[in-house]
Image 1 (cartoon, rainbow over the protein chains, first blue to last red):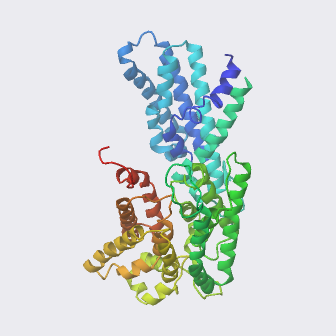
Image 2 (tube, one colour; image 1 turned 90 degrees about the horizontal axis):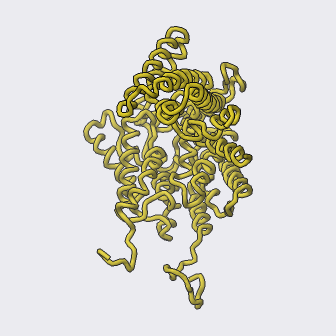
Image 3 (cartoon, chains in turn cyan, orange; image 1 turned 135 degrees about the vertical axis):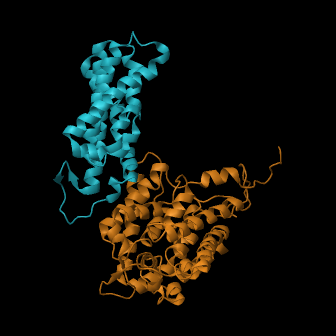
Length: 200
Length: 321
């Protein structure tokens, strides 16, 4: 499978959120706006790429019986880096995302890719896998955040899309709106995935 | 009997009454006429506008889905119309048209068709839409035109006043006003009496049974009554509680929805008790003034469980068989 095909696949067919339904907790909780979704996605991508690379390098050193604790230590290291890095450079975003940044450590996408891919494949493939999975995750969070922000507040990435005196559908920035939007996005993404799969 | 003198070669039940979804749905719609008449009398043409728009929107949305669906959907079977009327009875008479349209889309699409259409939905579609609107547009959904005030005066419902201003502010509201509908509120929550009159025919036809409404209203009465007895200076009387808000509309027409209520006697009693308990709990201690819709939706989720633990008695079954 070439790189381009793999990229397309990780965005639509094997997308962690809409294809595999992994990592739903940060997906639902942090996507109140497009910006938050993007920030959360990129932070996760960084951890995913870094941990995949390190675990791939150490794959022959880590004993099989203690692999999960070892993976978690590696992942937790990078999560700490992201947490402190964001606190230093993107303070407002860090404050909005709050607890969900430290919680990246238990995001099942990251441990899943470490276990299923990085511990069995070489450095370059693991790097690409982490990058594509991370970008797929970011893509879903950005779409979901955009839908919720536009419908719920009438803004998008800080731009006002509707006149100020219009009522917006407040429920979309609240928890029930997250579930509803995700459901309808899943419908659309499954349709796209079917078209891509069928086209091959 | 539908097919008199014809030998029915089918699995039981073989005796049929000739009832159909269409007949039941339109009958329920008709029994709402007294309550609708009161709302038109109180709110004037605004009430008619809300009713017609909501009914047209819900049936329209269902027709649109029927057009693009692979399965056959009878959008004129009255179920969409009933959902529309019940939704209209849940909104203020000055609701803007786009809010009614959003409500109709939510009721039919999210409340009903995503589950597979009539008979498959877990939650009462009209209530799903009501709660969606209440959470999304809190400003429009909590300023209610006062009955007979055709100059556009709005105010809170008696329950809203009780929540924000305390027990003293509701002293002037008499039981007669509550029963007849001389209070602020949505189209369907103002007249408890008219709803009761309309529903008598449903009891007569056995479309609804007494267990759910009695358990529901009874629980609210007992629960709020207990607090009233302990401290009448802080809590409103149980009579006030059962005649205000959407309790009668909810207990008679929404909790008894055939699709989203339990089948057996015990299941129905427990369902009604749960609805009443959570209604009273939200009214007395919650942040919202009214809890009927939340309580019914919450108990809707328990219906499959209630049906499992208290299965309907089937004739011809042998114990330990």
